[in-house]
Image 1 (cartoon, rainbow, N blue to C red):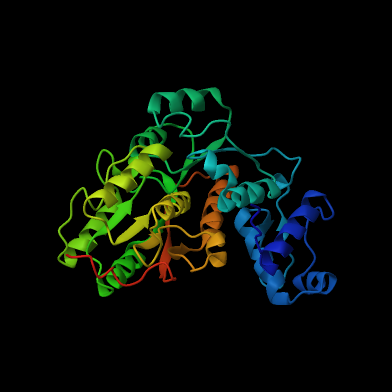
Image 2 (image 1 turned 120 degrees about the vertical axis):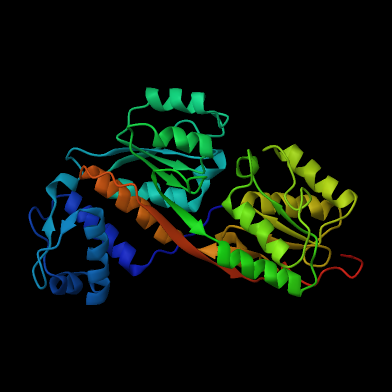
Amino acid sequence: MAVFEFRSATEQVADYLRGEINRRRWNVRLPGSNALAAELGVGKGTIESALALLEQEGLLVSQGRGRPRRIDLAKRVGAPSCSIQILLGGELDRSRTMMIELERQLQSAGYAATFSTKTLESLRMQVKRVARFVEETEADGWIVLGGNHEILQWFAEQPRPVYAIFGRQATLDLAGVSICRAAALARAVQRLVELGHRRIVLLTRPDRRKPGPGLFERQFLDTLARYGIHTGSFNLPDWEDDPEDFRDCLDGLFSYTPPTALIFDQTHLYFAAQQHLAQRGLVAPKHVSMLCNDPDMVFRWAVPKVSHIHWDSDRLIRHARRWVGQLARGKERRKKSLVEAEFVEGGTIGPAPRTASA
């Protein structure tokens, strides 16, 4: 199903100006913001915000207050371009709106950015396979989505510039961006506890659990413990990254001591579980509360609306785009960025079933 994305006026103006610059409409300097506002029929504030985005990309250079921006000719399409390979976690990421938008913005900025022909999933999350693929692929820099600790550690030890999006990067010396979910998670768990839930389960990918729980998983277990809930493998069950094993895991959970609340690491896990549980006559929130760790535009169309942890994907894209811009200018920086998240309560969580006992 196609997903419609609504872009802000600032982003649309930036896209237009970027395209005109790359078509060589202007060669040295851009017209002033007043002239551009009059030409495009938008407010001066929108123009200034769009110009600021192009400055972040390095396409424009400020000449001081009240003076037209200078165009960095090296950033135009047709000039030597920075080649970026985007190594995705799995095939599902190719249709992920955020990653499609990141690729589009990098290409619009004049960079040779493309999704890699293989994914971490197809390379079986094995360092040797990833290393062989990277060494055989020509690129000035790599953006890696959802890498495990071993893979990101290998990248950090290489001379190749790399930027990590998500993944287990916290203790590694490389550039990247992560989502700070701690406060949102604490609020979500607090709300579940207020609703009487004690048997709360987090279903997360194997690379987030092995060889030990990742930061978010540890925060989840610590939060449960603060509410006096004994934690163990029940709260963070083991399953292989396979649809059949995922369904077996769900069946196992509900065969003995059924959980009253489920938190899912990714949207595809949420939807797969929702369908599977419905076939067993289990629906949210009547029989089990359900919450997703990631946002999805489809959630707005769901009835009831899906409870989830939300974060601004545009901010994440800007961080990654800024890193590429710096790399294109010969400045590789290993700065880590955080994007704050918030808990959005929808209709898929409710009171724990009365038959549930602590």
